[in-house]
Amino acid sequence: MPPLTRGRAIDRGIPNNLMAEYYSQRTGVGLIITEGTFISNQANGWVNAPGIYTEEQTEGWKQVVSAVHAKDTPLFMQLWHCGRASHSSFHDGRLAVAPSAIKINEEYIHTPQGKQPHETPRALETEEIPQIVEDYRKAAENAKRAGFDGVEIHSANGYLLDSFLQSKTNQRTDKYGGSVENRYRFLKEVVEAVITVFPSRRVGVRLSPNGVYNDMGSPDYRSTFLYVAQELNSYGLAYLHILDGLAFGFHELGEQMSLAEFRQVFTGAIIGNCGYTQTTAEAAIREGNADLIAFGRAIISNPDLVERFANNWPLNPDPELKIWYSPGKEGYTDFANYQAS
Ligand SMILES: Cc1cc2nc3c(=O)[nH]c(=O)nc-3n(C[C@H](O)[C@H](O)[C@H](O)COP(=O)(O)O)c2cc1C
Image 1 (tube, rainbow, N blue to C red):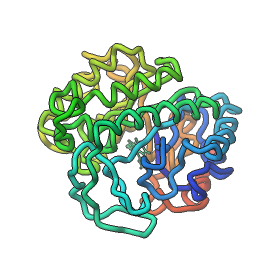
Image 2: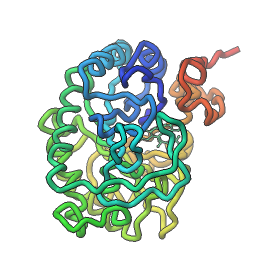
Image 3: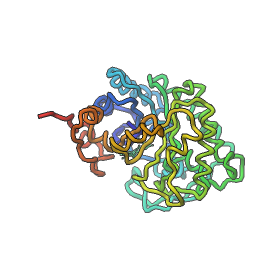
């Protein structure tokens, strides 16, 4: 189960009973990765997404952890900083932060005050970066205290770490910008901070080399992401989680990057994702390009996805967009398991 933001943490980003029930319904998969979870107040950029930076949030996660562990399913938390994909109305009027002052060229963003046009973010000062690295470390520590088995560092989909990696959004001239080594430095520092909390085999990293989501896609995408994967290979991470599929949009700047390419430079476990079916997933594993495949939309509407695959039972259709982030039970915990007639 890949990270899936569902916007049900309606009280100060604190996980609740309903969220525990939702995750519990989806146990039985090889690994559950939680929805993106904010590492700090500054990281926030999504209405009613949870956090892991206050005591109350950390306490709230414990009920999710115990519900999932009660059914013997391992659970990782995805650590998230939205970066420029946020808005001043999340931050008492202060601008969102980014590697460079480059605005997302898309229509609007959902904010606590409804849909608003994107704003040009503020470029982070070099001196501010160590505090954000420390926020990741502290968030990992809180996740560990809450009982998580590990964490996934969200470095995909145009959020803060991805926007540092990519030349389209990183035009810095300090040690965090310019060469690919410099653009990778922030992620490297975050990985090295987080593995002081969890052993590296309990830490995964997510990348989206093909994605256009949040106005991403850089001409040097291939050399950038191969470099990053090669560097990450040295840590003995739990896995590299790659959105290789194009089902969430492709930047079309060249050939799609494939899992096979990542296999050449990354020798640890690889999770593939995005638009897979049971057939294409099994092929990717059989061909040796992936160790796991994550199913996002399918597990929203099929809590018993594993049994359905195993028994060749039909799947419910993908969930409608209108229930992805709507508050409450509808479209969240009300998908039934398959009933054989
Ligand atoms: C409702 C919804 C919420 C998502 N939230 C996140 C998230 O918090 N973090 C993340 O890395 N990806 C997120 N994604 C992307 C999914 O993890 C996954 O990459 C995407 O759904 C494609 O996989 P699929 O074709 O199996 O659905 C989200 C996708 C959906 C549909």
